[in-house]
Length: 400
Image 1: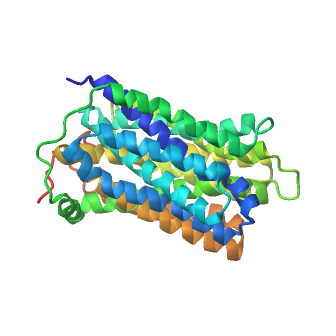
Image 2: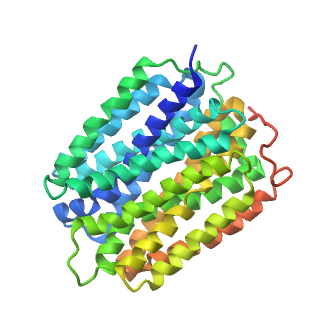
Image 3: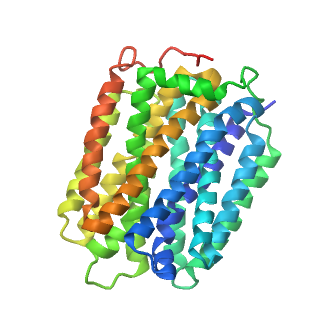
């Protein structure tokens, strides 16, 4: 028999690893760009490979965990992340680095989707709040990556620090080995792929997926490009020590962590769509401030607003998804993350082309455009909710 709290802790550890994954490329971007003399278009290719790996992982995890359970998939994919980090630290060919970044993404994609589905499975009645708390551990992992690099970069090489972070992955692996997990869902069927596609006939699911596609794109673009923005725009013409560029990324992530802690309490009482719209307004304020920021301090304040504003969409929307499809949570989360990560890849690669031709200073403008599209999609999705502000929708099953 499994313990819900121990299982939720396992989900939190897996999500912490995904935070490391999602910030791994942004944290190491300047190191890789200098090692291989990459231009913005080549960097755009790298930033697309990470979400492409995450996309692949998100596509495969749902039917597997519904059918076979969580333990071994979490273990194997954690080891993939470890191997990818070691390869990124020591690889000396651009093609090898591309493979290792994909490997990190593949393992991370499974960890992201599976831990969200696992947390939803053991959090009936409080999914929005618990998923928000789960997101805090994403932030801890994500914040730990650049902060560790910034703190140790004066004494150790970035490659050596990244390799050390890779070894840390063994800690969650040991925990996954020793605790009991929920049994596989007996209702899982071989037609899981068709079941996932059938979800697209549900208007709320489709609109929510498109909104999360834009949200994922904004998060990925911010995580992968904010250090470059600080180096070439905010700190242009001035000495740009590595820790000063990484601080922008740390502020984004730290603000997201703090906001998700707040949301983990707030969402125990309400999952009002107003939370989503307030978060969009906060992100927009950050984008505008960054666009017109006249100095480093103002840019850091803008980064904090962006991070805080980006915190709400995933836990709130995923809470509704978990409530509607509890019997096939793995398949439902797999489908929603697949859609979301298509957006991440598309926006990241498109911004790479844009930065190459028009400069990285276009980042705040692209963020504001994405926010407008997100506002429209979430407004339409909210209209599909029963009672609009109801804390939970009636459970639905995925047709075979």
